[in-house]
Length: 429
Image (tube, rainbow, N blue to C red):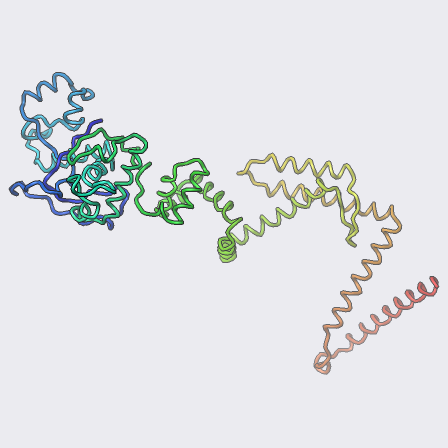
């Protein structure tokens, strides 16, 4: 569409759609209709598109007869860009009363921005700021610094609009800077395309912005989309809180990142440990994971361990049963509760595994002896550790006859044990 943007008498700065209110200079109060005209200066270049009432009622009648109440025809589009009807010298509202020209001007400028977005302001920069390498003697255009001074904003902000136009020009959407003169009128892209080229902060050129850009390209999306999200974490938080699908995407991204970010691992672990609900949930999930791991190990490796730690081969029917339970678990949807299925699989396979181990030990005399020997050493080690921890410095205070009796009985049991082992030793020799 062709958008006519003529210099106006207002020297207010163009609004940046991506800036917060704090980033935009305070706007001047509405000018009085009594204000005398101001001579055109460089400041005129930064004003909004000027609203100009139609010259005659005859024009209005002709446009109405040709265009009716439907879509604006080509001539009307070229002349007024489809704005609300402004044919009369004086705007008239639905109630028949005159509309203040300042209101009509605002409505016109709003319509221009609604259709073109930031392109309307980028055009002002593109036709008013001279490209790099061009001297002031070659063109009436001004520098970005001077334009920013006239606009009441920083040169960096001006350059963000400049760079957006430059990128669009490289893609053939808008003319190059050299083809534009101050006050030039060109066809502007739709507003929806603006955010594909405009970057509201300098983050794109920073190390952080470069990393975000690379990640976005790897995911097959435009870097500007990712940069917008990174510049507004509050909006990201709101989306995660309100939308389950966004929360799932955030969770998946965190899981991918945590693998290569030790600091994030520590922070998340600390958050979980300090949150009772999460701590309990993690403990339950860890228990379920251990149980599934037990079933999976039997199904995939086909090995069982005896109480003494000896490895025995799992029977074929046990492996088949473990595989059957795993297939049931794998078929569950992500949102289904797996706790009950996990418990059933673990209990069933555990009972069958214990029975298989017992039968294997009974069939193998050597394995049976090894199991008994390991069990004896385990009991002896535990008993020794208990007695080593006992102290009798306060025997006078804790003494009771029952203590001595039980120790004497234990002494006789130990003596019998020693005697049996000595006999076994003599028999071997």
